[in-house]
Amino acid sequence: MRITNPAASTATAAPSYATPETPPTAMKMEEKVISIIQSNTEEKAGITLRSDLRKELRLDSFGTLMVINALEDSFGIALEEADFARVNTVNDVVSLLREKYACA
Image (tube, rainbow, N blue to C red; front, side, top):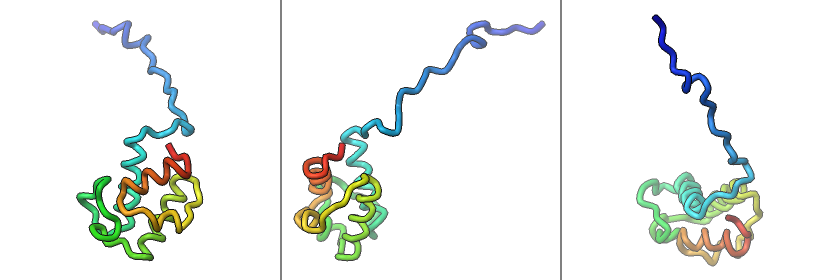
């Protein structure tokens, strides 16, 4: 005798309302910035919003250009190097992206 569950056969998956245009949450943006910096520095672990780009992460001029290019690609913006020269920490990068470039 075969027993079936009628509820299982009529259940449908809930529709997904997320779209590519859905803006990332604040934490997701911070995580994305940290991930971009991690992939462009030798320091892979322990990067936080307080990490100093030059002192702790030893980001040199070439590394800075790599991070700028990755941020531009990821967020679809054009960063000015002069703006990036004023940032010191990872949190400064996040603030710059939010304030000047209106990234979510």
